[in-house]
Structure formats: C-alpha cells, structure tokens
Length: 187
Image 1: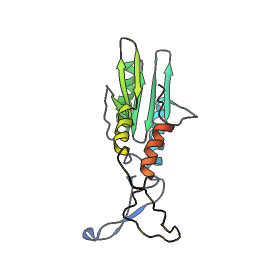
Image 2: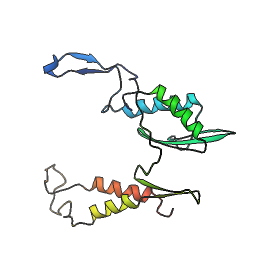
Image 3: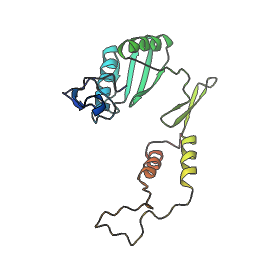
Image 4: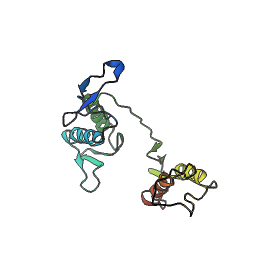
C-alpha cells in the first residue's frame, strides 16, 4: 500500500556501491520513510472521498457511504481495511472502482480476524460476535512465565551500561495496554 502514494517532496537515496553508489531521486513512496503512512493515508482518503464516502470527524479511520438503497461502512488500519455493507452490489461496485485506483488488492469475503479481533457470524440471529479471546490467551501464555526483575536495585541510572540480562518490558506492556484500553471485554 505504501508504494501507491507519491512523495510530497524531493527525496534522494544513494545506491549501494555494487550498483555504482550514485545518488538517485526517489519518485514513489516506500516502506521505512517516516511520512510513508501519511502519504498512503492521504492517497486512500482521496480515493474514498472521490467515490462519495464521508470521513468520520471523530474517528478518521472510519468512513461511510449512505443512500436510500444501502450503506457501506469501512474502517482502515494502516494498509488493511474492513468493510460492512447491506448491499452486495454497492460493495462490488466500490471494489471495482477501488481496484482501478491502486496497483493490487486482496479481497476476503468471510473475515474471521482483523487487527486481533475474532469475528463469529451467526446469520440466523443476525449477530456478529467480536472477541479478543485468542489475542488475550496468546498474551497470557507469553506473559505467564517467570521473568527476572528487569532492573536490579544496584543499577546506576546515571551512566548507560548495556545489561544483557535486562529484557525490556515496554513491548509487553504495550500489548497488554491494547487489551485494556482498546478492547471491550464486556462485549
């Protein structure tokens, strides 16, 4: 997805010495650029707005397309999107349009997982059950093992001395905060 957008400023790179080591201008956007996600998001936003979607002012990753015959709701997380519609023709028409605006797409009609959420569709009752059960159980298994204290009480914080035994818990804390802050275990 990041390759879809174009840089909004002149950007240069140096080729490896085996390729001559020359300085070249980078025309497209690519992974690793700090503005890459923003360029892709601006490109995607333009595609959706041009089609007739309305962007939610409170949650800018949420879009809707409404008229008298149906609706489409779509949510975007970086380069993944999830779409709900009550009209298959609307969905197919939009996807055909979208595929003319980007190089490549992948469609999955029966989504079972999206950004850590598991979906269970019960058609007879017209229900969709969302859960983080697998995500939480995987994290539980990972974090339920014994850990050493990350920082011994004798560590001097005034000088930066690498400690090979100090496994940072920042990533772990972030994963658990996601469950607490973003997941809705009550649903």
